Length: 512
Image 1 (cartoon, rainbow, N blue to C red):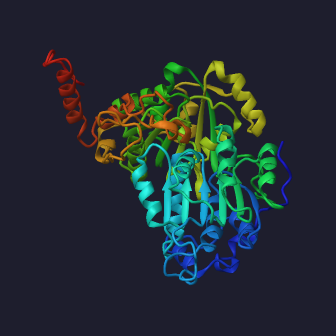
Image 2 (image 1 turned 90 degrees about the horizontal axis):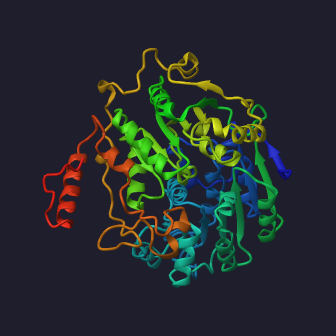
Image 3 (image 1 turned 135 degrees about the horizontal axis):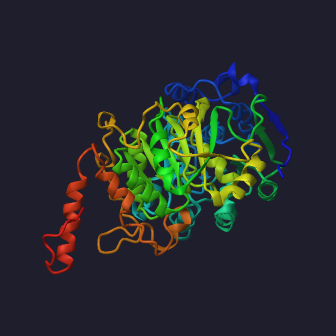
């Protein structure tokens, strides 16, 4: 049951007021204007007057409506960086002044990037701290001095316990996507982190959904918080109104045929496909790659370097289809995502909201397609009822169904393979994979985050998952039809490794 907000408005004035009108400092206003951001979104318009006054906030708005700047601007404005006014008199130079705690690695990177953009005209140093990467570069950043840290609970705890992270001078702390942190079991770590910070800190909690349990948690750690909910009066549904939602009852053996046609819809930009399991994500990536699409997988069995390679390739457009498990449901903030496809029915309504929230961001239009297996119809009905979507009985759909083409603007005659003339993306192999010194490396090869507590706890591969092995989906993406080369060389390297491991036997065998 949702708790009633203290402030609930569409903030119509946001369209007419600039950030400067809300008291945002000139360097931040200038930095945002440089990337085309001049007027606040509703959640920002409601939050700024309260947050800039240093009052605790529980902020709520739908996914993709601009929560990051809602807390980011006040956080940055209350910090002082090297060479700025007040720096010479500041006693704790280089010790973090603000912290943002997030549930996943991908969200940490996105938030850190957004804060860096807003602070471009400032001298503030922002460090992104999360598991799955080597400790040394993060420790080096902290030793050089930082003003703002953005991180996941497990790695923050690790660095604090090793006495590399000093939280005693935190003036502002933000819990972003707090409901997800509760769902993932991070509450004990979050409580430990909060206990190390000054009692007088300014605290903000932001999330897309706000059940009573989250509000109760916030009230235990916050001082008379103001609960803010931003909502457009013409958009009363649980989802953003700019997202067109389509639900089909699809047969498992026909899903790829349907999917490959949806990916050829008119004016499709980037697309994210959500699968329930890592194995399904890898398999779907393989099948799409074989059909000529520039696809990449993103799931917990990939090492952090491979995950970041896939995300960079997706953001840069080298691949335009990302097949992901829910590890990516939060944290991918890419404006050009026009389609989100739930290849398998989400577990619940919260998962559904966060998945489709990857499209229709920042006021853009988007399309969300959900496939519901026969066995998942009861589950879908619960989601539909909870969100009042109006699709309790998904229409049975195959790749030959006429309504599929009309619903999603798919050209007549489209087949299940991408025409060679349209295979213009560079592909995953065109994006370099970095050596991140990933935790848990063994014999020079990544173990994908098996190095102690900061592996699976920060949204990565669980212990013993063998996350450093390149998945079938990732390897197939590198060898995609019509994409940039590199897959054949990778196959030759794998063949040589197998020959060495078997004492030279089978030297003539294929590595494809």
